[in-house]
Image (cartoon, helix red, strand yellow):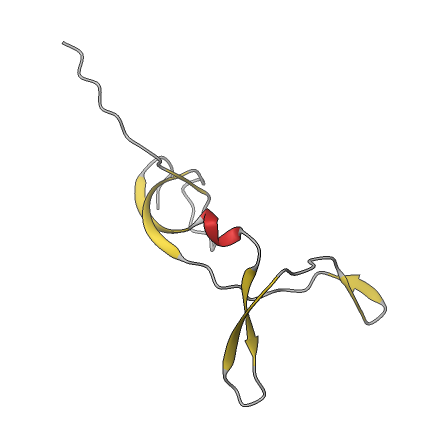
Length: 92
């Protein structure tokens, strides 16, 4: 991937960030359930220290045009910006 080039990327819908979120919770039998709830994301005390806890949330994604902002390197994470609209102007 090169900086400044257009690519297709999976972008999430902002409507999925509204509360209540859809959390994925493991069941005792090895399956998973989706539970809607308003979550408290405050750090939890684990082993006598407050720590952030990862949450598994259902998010809808859709392919969208993006421009790469990261430098021309191969990293696990690439910084992109979505293209919300393109306008072409012809000057005569």
